[in-house]
Amino acid sequence: MQKHHAAFLAVATLALAGCASPGTPEDRLVSKPNMQFSRSAIYAYSSRITSQLQPGLALTAGAQPSTCTLCR
Amino acid sequence: MKAHSGSWLRAIAAACVVLSAPALRAADDAAALLPFWNTIEADSEAVLSSDIQLTDTRLLYRHEGLALEWDAAFSYASFDIDYRPFTEFDFLGFSEHLHEDRFGGQANLRYSVVDRLTLLGGAGAYDGYPDYRRVWIANRFRQKYDHPDFPRIPGYEEPNPWGWNASAGLRWEYLPLRAFAELKATYASDQTAPGYEDSTNSVGDYLLLRGREKLDTTSLGLSSENVLNSWLRALNEFSIIDTTARELRFTYQGSLNAALSSKWVLRGYGGVSAEDPQFEAFFFGSTAEWELTPALSLSLTGRYYKDTGEIENSLFTSTAAPPLESWEVGLGFRYLWSRSSLRLYIGALWTNYDPIRSGTAEFTYLYADREWALAQLAYSWKF
Image 1 (cartoon, each protein chain N blue to C red):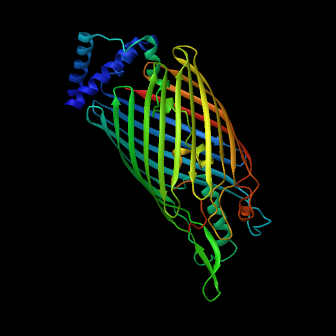
Image 2 (image 1 turned 135 degrees about the horizontal axis):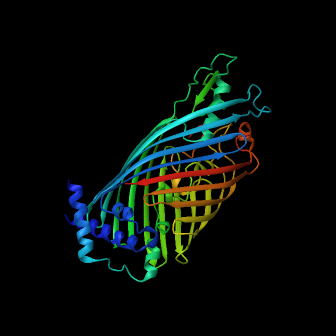
Image 3 (image 1 turned 180 degrees about the horizontal axis):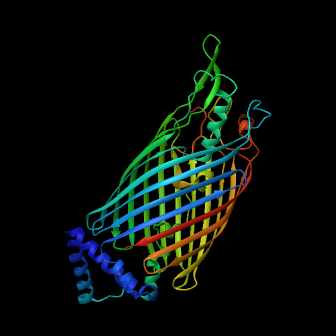
């Protein structure tokens, strides 16, 4: 029920306020989904597996890349 | 309440932007942009060479509300390896097919405590080998110290790798919709498949030394995302990583996305990693994306990676990888329906290692040059 209220409020606000332009038409370019640094798999531009092959990739470092025989 | 009003404004702004886009004017999309929505995502990828096949599949549910966003994911990875011993050093080793699984779960939370300030939290766990190299290396030690034709060498234990992690952080929108700073601390505990080394005790008798099994990792990451102008968005990420018995690792990655026109986007990134005493890596890549129709996008990706080889840290036998250089090229397709999206990526990857060092000779075939085929498939449904 609360969800419906929220949805109604959003639609009402849109209707009353209208869609103010976020800026020049070009401003919308920077907000395109493929311009974001998204966590969605649909807009992913990296691979979870290839980080196994490349141990120095910045965002995969940690305990995993080390395959030391005997850490000293 | 303040946090909620900020979230409402963002939701309305997002709805305005998307409603303005011809590709997304369907009533279904407008409904999907209301302040509560849910997403189910399934994605799977495979990286295949002639003797090693790796897969990773994830199923994720995400809920995005006014102030609270959370997701939970289950993942499955498989490792299939045609193991081959380097018989010049490994006289009793034998070829065999290895298959291992890894199961994992991860949950993340984002909560807007006040307007423009979001708390981040996350936790996860896995059971299985974290990467294919550990599967190969563990089998080398298994064949050497627990050979099926001989008694097990005292001191050897069958590995049981698993681990967990937890993270907490803050995201601060210090310029509305234009600039974000994020600070995140992570702790990870890994029960590894240890290495082994032949040695002697104080009276000269044989002793099998087992390497460290438990590794603790703490890391601190700082990033800044900035909208530079109407067509440029940048992300700079720094992190410091401290793992048991190792020196600090420093990493940096910079990314820059450029909307060259309404139909063309160019994404680029580059980064470095460094760890004393001698590990260094650098990498860069780029993706050019073309919006062929409002629903269909095509992309071309190229990547390069090079490092100086992992750090030798053993007395005689080392599992450390020699210096590596690799390249990747690939083609991507993305198709958007009213509430669903599909992405396919196929590519080729080449890994070229420097000649093997004497201490690593046992792993000659693990660190052989390979050509890999890559495939990624992702599907998302918003409701």
